[in-house]
Image 1 (cartoon, one colour):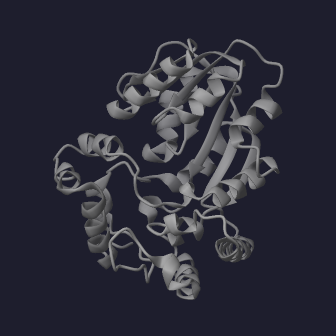
Image 2 (tube, rainbow, N blue to C red):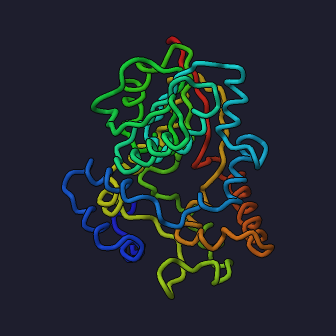
Length: 324
């Protein structure tokens, strides 16, 4: 476990350049919940793998079998075809992109999204008003303190379950009671090492790949700075920046399988791409031949890594509530 890393200093300068001094000041709040809220209210402007169209197509292919079919559409056609008047609760909804897509499907008569970040919730509600959606709403709420009333047919976690701890207690005390008997828990999630403490084999593989990437593709947002090494983030920096980041992520998959019936499980990697492309992903958003060639090489390297080591850090899964 790494408590302090040289990479923490580089991350500090990158965040100062991208977001200004207010970003650093917000991290000094003594209240962990306030630091978590501020982390998401600041927004996700960093260059990460999810901004790359070809990476999204890769996720789609691994989940739905088609690069043009996202997991929401796959979920609807696979599990809710012909359904009507279902209710959906999304926890950690952010700006509501996924929830709005599902609300537009005609399957759900009620979609409620919850998040701590008021700025994101405001944008989500504004978008629903623009689209004229009357079955979709968003609220600022901490589910660990004030859980919603009633029960839901579907509960969604999109990159949010890994922010809770301990996972088993959270799912038992907060989620199971509000999920209908036979209802579905849908998870699209990071389930890798706690606090992003990457395994040694991940670090070695990433740095080998990074050395082979042309310099122009390693340019960060900081002028004249090129990414040259992948490092584990320090625990102190993790807790200062966002205390909720992956405190018990390694428990997610085994606990889900213990408490619920697994209906569908689709791993889609991220063990190398997530680390490797952080801060340089903007260089890979082009659709030219060279960029596509480089990405295909990285995709093959990650597939080979997953075949050798077995565990996928990211997955999509559908789980059903059942009596025990």
